[in-house]
Length: 338
Image (cartoon, rainbow, N blue to C red; front, top):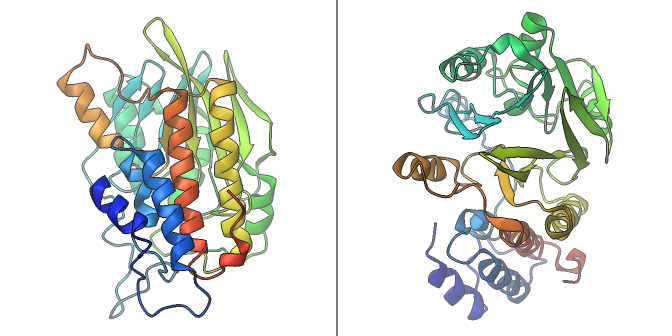
């Protein structure tokens, strides 16, 4: 990741480095404008939100096999388990590549995403809950952010073992029912069959806790972001788990525009709804491991996951501008007015 001053120099000079050959329809100056706006929003504290600004004009396709090798091999099961109570009622159970968050309620656990496969569930989710003094059998609901295998891969295992409900948006259930998954890989667990369906604005309730579902299209047409209450001692906070940030669906302008508008929406909700914690289902985007290390170094200090409503708004704004910068590299006319 470039230091912020490097982002500023590139953007304000209106010279953006394009990955690969120049695209026929591109506007480097518009890309530079949005890179500069993203960097200004991110500041020094939210630089991971700038990752889509790093290579303007990339191919927007997922990794392809090399010499017959599986491009996901190095990502599956990545990292040692690091189960952590980041709040009194919210636990990190993810791998080095993909996150799983467990929300504890009075009647069991709501799990957000189910990693890549059964093995990861055993090694990270079940093991992690046990290490934290919780029972994996208390998993009652699984909210899957979108219909890609790195988020639903272990869901069927949990459903069959513990009877947990699997929850996706109606849009993504419908897309998965076509029989042609957007992405598929032999290292992912099986795709679930339709179970519980949610739409924008619905609540997922378990015991004393309700989670608001927001359909935030872009990464998929039915990507879910979730807003949930988290507790830190005597203080209550509100977190958003941003459901899908990858641009690996090809140069499809409508999808880029949808993501931009989803990010704009969440940036606008942070203040009015009191959302002061930004989380992702990939730990690199929200600096999960950096913040866990900070908690270990200063257990009595302020919770680093609490970045304030202004911080959440800035994170979403930085994400939005980076996506706009990428869109300007192949279809500048489609970039929404700022």
